[in-house]
Length: 151
Image 1: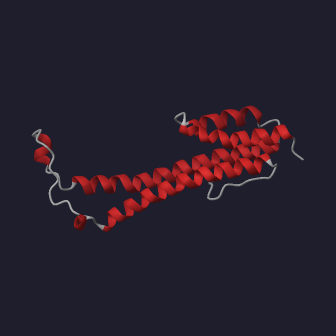
Image 2: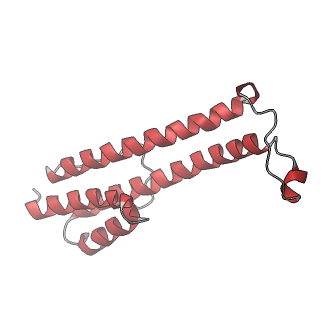
Image 3: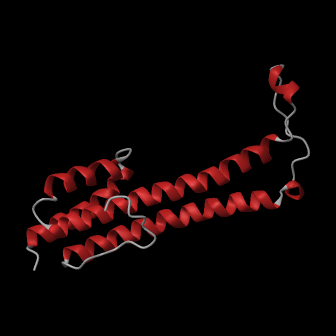
């Protein structure tokens, strides 16, 4: 049976990942600080802290992969019609022959990666809230699609 203090600390670890909206890399720094300072007090805090950190690291990896798919494709598609002479001569960039007909299937893949990123961020927000509620009730919560970096 977990104490109220233990449950609240576990919920705080999950909620501290939302600090990413206020502080750059706050979703990594704050949970690690809270988890590392309190993990010896309870195995429940230790398990929930590992879950929160592993989830954030997994999301970073998924975001990195989606970015590596989307950005080069979109960059190439936009700039494939810009002539190099206009770039080096200091002229205005004129994108010629750019229309919806020139959009290839690869751009559809890049746009899909962008939509997946947006869906990932919305899902992340709701899963963090759900995990904090579950852990404040003393229930173990395991995030879906989480790679166990910290065991």
